[in-house]
Image 1 (cartoon, rainbow, N blue to C red):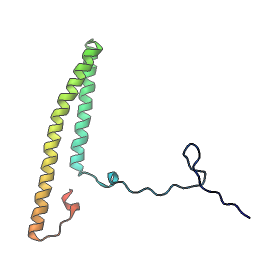
Image 2 (cartoon, rainbow, N blue to C red; image 1 turned 45 degrees about the horizontal axis):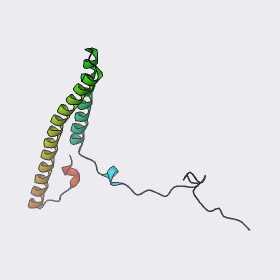
Image 3 (cartoon, rainbow, N blue to C red; image 1 turned 60 degrees about the vertical axis):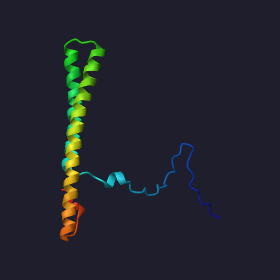
Image 4 (cartoon, rainbow, N blue to C red; image 1 turned 60 degrees about the horizontal axis):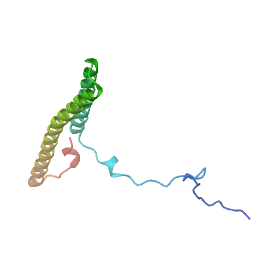
Length: 121
């Protein structure tokens, strides 16, 4: 008479030893990727905003400003530079999307097969 163990989660919600987790469904986040050039623009804009904020804060600290002034200066710089770079990346991404739409439309009109891999480049 052999007893089989039922797989019940422990009180901490963890599974018993030797038990494997069921395979997770693939998320759409991992599948969808932006073209490299747009990713590069987004990443560079984030890095620039971060570096400007840190640079303004350090310069203000070295000038001997109080903490409130340092925060206001750094926050203002991040807001203004972030707004300008957001506008730039929006225009850039919009142009890329419109260009891809035109390329796809021309391919459809000429009867060529449309490949999304070619339009992502």
